[in-house]
Amino acid sequence: MHRAVVLGTGSCLPERVLTNNDLEQMVKTSDEWITSRTGIRTRRIAGSDEQNYQLASRAAVMALESAGISGAELDLIIVATMTPHMIMPSCACFVQAEIGAEKAFAFDLNAACSGYLYGFDLADKYIASRPEMKILLIGSETLSARVNWEDRNTCILFGDGAGACVIGGSDERGILDSNLFSDGKLWKLLYMDSPASRNPDLLDPDRKGCFIQMSGRDVFKYAVRAMEDAVSGLLDRQQVSMDDVSLFIPHQANIRILGKLMERVGVAQEKVFINVDKYGNTSAASIPIALDEANRQGRLQKGDLILFCSFGGGFTWGSMLMHW
Ligand code: COA
Image: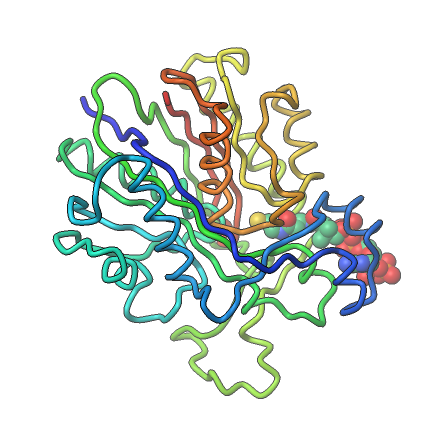
């Protein structure tokens, strides 16, 4: 059977860097508090010519170059995002127009921070039925537009950016297995209300509904336990141990979550790709940005076993194993 294999990667980060010292001027916080609680030192903030679909398209162009194919050869574009440029049309349709992917069909997928793993899983299913397909999978977010810059509990955590992979079929390498979960009962612990059919009032005077709402401590607790279970369940099912894994690329939420997770799943820090210090939590973009950086740093060799895991609003979470 053919599986989804990554043919090329790309990423795009906004120019503007927002430091912890900058945040000290905006809310009652300190570089020391943010660094010790989250590991985040800087994050990127999109400017007016860095809308979600523009970041996504720039990451896509890089991924196409790295795969050595043109936009015209793509069959499908999926954008994982929870901050689309518009509700309709999808961000994926904007990208399609930008990169001249005329024969591709295109749609968005929202599974919050787990969107990229859900997208990989979906791409793998398309490849199983049509191995010749060329799929562009992007994770792209402009969370800065959805953060309350007066709320120190959340505004320190998030950043903007995009990452992309071109995916094809292989009967030797590619996605080995994925282990995905959701629990909608817990939605109130992490959510963003508007704009959505539930609350279409964009003119909400205090814009409260537009912002990310979070119970930080609860999210922390669930995230560690859920990712641990998703990883250990997958390793057990595939009868592989952490020693067989060459690189672990987790969702970059925050360093304390990652630290606890590494401890519980028993992985050495050298095997874990971490860039949350530079970009903060970029939600669906965090895994593809990390994957592109790991690729460009030469940390991925053909045949290596790569482990991914994620956790986000919904709740949604999961893990995935891939032979590079
Ligand atoms: N600067 C200074 N103080 C802050 C602060 C900030 N940026 N944010 C919160 N505080 C304060 C709180 O107001 C509280 O003060 P109080 O005791 O006077 O009420 C105190 O710090 C402790 O708050 P608490 O929320 O209990 O802190 P915490 O140790 O849980 O750390 C998070 C907060 C958000 C860093 C932590 O809960 C976390 O990482 N949660 C997971 C978030 C996440 O990753 N979400 C996305 C998942 S995809």
